[in-house]
Amino acid sequence: MSEVLKAPLVVEFPFTRSLGPVQSAFLTGLRERVVLGVKTTDGRTLVPPVEYDPVTAEEIRDLVEVAATGTVTTWAWNHEPRRGQPLTTPFAWVLVRLDGADTALLHALDAPGPDAVHTGMRVRIRWAGERTGAITDIACFEPHDGEPDQPRGHDGEFENPLTGIVAHARLDYTSSPGRAQTDYIKALSEQRSVGERCPSCRKVYIPPRGACPTCGLATSEHVEVGPRGTVTTFCIVNIKAKNLDIEVPYVYAHIALDGADLALHARIGGIPYDEVRMGLRVEPVWTPGARYPDHYRPTGEPDADYDTYKELL
Figure 1 (spheres, rainbow, N blue to C red):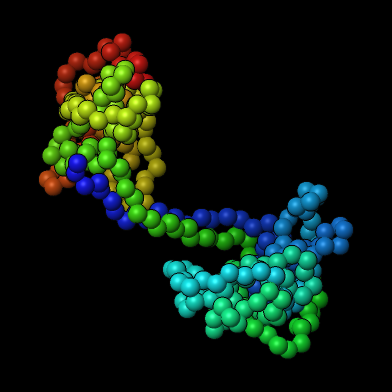
Figure 2 (cartoon, rainbow, N blue to C red):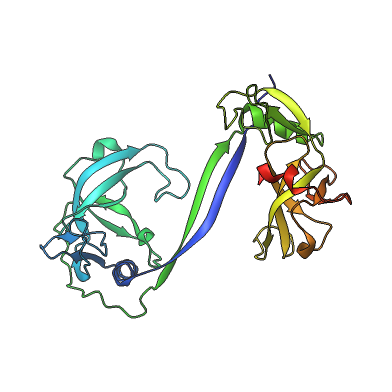
């Protein structure tokens, strides 16, 4: 058995969202070194604030300032900080109930070691030197032995309040396609398309998944299909992808390769986008050194009869 492939993979994108009046006031307050909560009709103060009471689902907008000092309610030690975390040295994740609040805020506590952290310890906010209106405006919490801070009674009204934020989401992980797709990818590097046949229904699936989606049985018999195929369905892409050097409009299609019982998707080229049609016969176009076809182009054959691919729509 050949070695299964694996590679590091990063999924990253900016997430833009607008802010309602409550979150706008909370994040703008952090920018101004003010911590705001929201008071419910039964007198509870929630920090971080929410727009709807988690108990009654009632809309709440009564903002109230709380102190920058508080008490640790629970904690966990982080021995190895990761990229993007609040501190680069080991620290504690803590839930802190700020003075004047009835709920706890999650953040980092800068402490010399786990022996220096305990439930009930007093802490205060260490503000970031540069603040933009984000939870990172709280650099972290730090131990505090002094008197509780006294809120100034801020009403939540600010000049130039934030109306929206951009959060950068990123996920780093190691991807492994498994045995079946490893064989498929390695065959592609030889400009061959190889699927797997189900031992029961005898259907050939490409790309293979290692099991028949209909029968649930493991698949291992390799079957070379194509290279030509038939367009079953397609769509016209009119929005240009940020990191894809393809001019719009272009066509992305499901292609049933000859001998396969499952259509795969690929870009169609070599033909005006408005001339692509169901039944169009196509073949792969490879670029030097590529591990997969760059696109598919018309073969010049007559269009396939609908009955030959209708089960693959």
